[in-house]
Length: 233
Image (cartoon, rainbow, N blue to C red):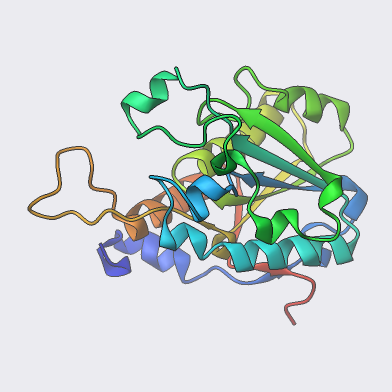
């Protein structure tokens, strides 16, 4: 499904997105964290759910990490599938990103960054980042973080769950200054075009879901920008 199959009101909104700088959206780097959803080998490089479209995130996400570091950000939280082989999720998706396999490891484009020892890896066994994980405990231990930049895959699945959890938690706790920012060029989803041979429930037109879920996040108070870097003057 091409971009022009997205509802026109969403297409019109997408055309209003602009690049942003870290100085604009996160003026205090000590109050900022980058949260990454599933930038792991099993979605970019190897395995049954690896996707060329998601693989294309490696460069813009690594660039954003480097810019964040140069801006002074020191908190990078990697929320990553690390599945138990008995998870019921495998009724919906092929077995992927099993604990102890290379599929569950951070992609080398990020793990080989010179500051990767500052990454906090939080393992999850479901799409949601906070059910039976250490995620909320990390947030509780870092109350000074008020700018949450979310990147990764997939826009309509784990990235959406991550960004929405951050937004809904802040709403529930009345955190008035907490902002969630999603750069559109640093998130994406996989593509299964709808066609005559596509089984019911399997079609997943990427542009449609990517655009609709960006819009849905925006409508729930998440800030969507076109891209994010050191300077976009």
